[in-house]
Length: 196
Length: 196
Image (tube, each protein chain N blue to C red):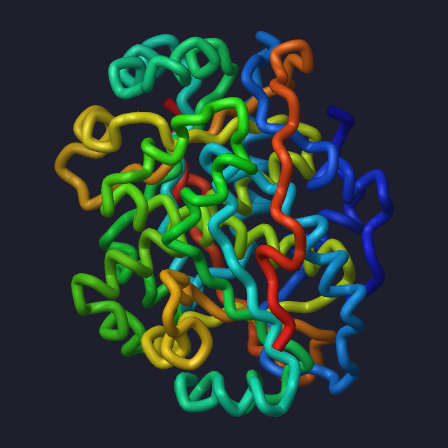
């Protein structure tokens, strides 16, 4: 592997990237959503299980379906974002392992225990949600991730009759800097990390 | 925000980055581990709760403590990696919210329910683990993430007497390309994504 990315890239990915609360109205072309997936899909998951399922909510009708699930503080910004991604995971991810992990025909059985199945889907679907945030920033999009919504309402509206479960939401678009809050501090290295 | 990163950066982060199974023996300087944290810490979490705690296992003594927890398939590569990160989360993350989310003095209470506390710590600690993978790649390091280990053994060895729980492991270093497996396929956009 090569050296570090330059400071402009590190800023765009991490240091100056912000969680946005307002977005400009320009729609996101479908080609950009496909480019986004074509980056994030390469991020690593356990046995390549790739359990995340993404709904890109862009139509007024789909936004209306999402609306009753949103907490008050997340309502206006989500309705105004050109796209809101429902990051979900499929508890039936094991059915795809024959394709995704072809060299280990028994891989499906590794996740047969219901607790392991649920933990694996949640952990790896969450990883893929983070890859989506980083891929969006890589493409010059701004993001706003949210857990403040009612998962059961989203599941009933979008995933009825499946074993797909919503995890969190990500607003996508070009952020409006005037709606940013002051940046909150982060933990010092010594408070979050140990070298052993 | 600016435009997309160039193809070299997108390759390094996503398209040609691989999960490595062997690492060159060169140690990772402490300054690099600090630089890694100083990038990943900026990734978004719910109410900036930042529950992840990271142990960078680099000494032979700490590697020996980790050893009994590892599955057979993860043993050799983990013992040979110059650093193995234990990605964990602190269920007591709420105690830091006064510092991390100072404008909402009641934020701690949002996570008081034990299920919400556990789910929030696991979801956001996992996001931070993904940010670490992406930050490592940004700095030119290779990674190998693993869930194949016994969490209870790691918790007893490294987190006794705390409410910190291990989540997954990440080997860090400069990968040995000769130990790579053939790359597995990913799901098509249509199999993982819906535009609604």
